View: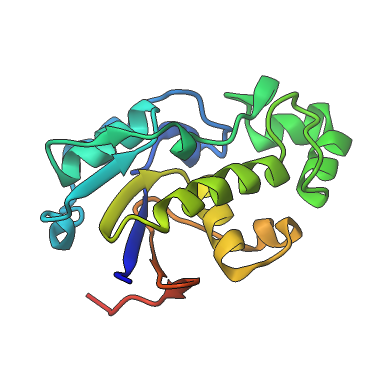
Length: 187
């Protein structure tokens, strides 16, 4: 059986991220994009370049290659009516709902997707890759990458908020009978 390698890369920085806002379908931060950091030079020859449907993931994927395939399972968590709102606004307007959402992975007080549901969605997608040998590179969101890590490590979704993923953060996963998290070499 050949190994499946999945490299997850978080999209580049957005203005919403910088302001601690729940994302909309916003573009990458223009200031960040103008600098055009050298992104993913080591991934230029990957056969399968995947990305979420949002503009920020498609723009980041375009920095890595000319042809990417949009995968709906890589879409950001649905934050419902909290889209575009900042954490500070929620702390002022509905602190108990924010606390419930952070503490209970099954809660969705925003009317969108719960963390548990997101973890199941991403876990189902990981299962489809188990028979895809070779290297897949997927540009997606911090929440999706966190959900993948929860699945691979077999953690409870309650551990979800203990994982941080920075813009352009990389997580490498391998499947050969079971999924494994792989530490990457220092550049």
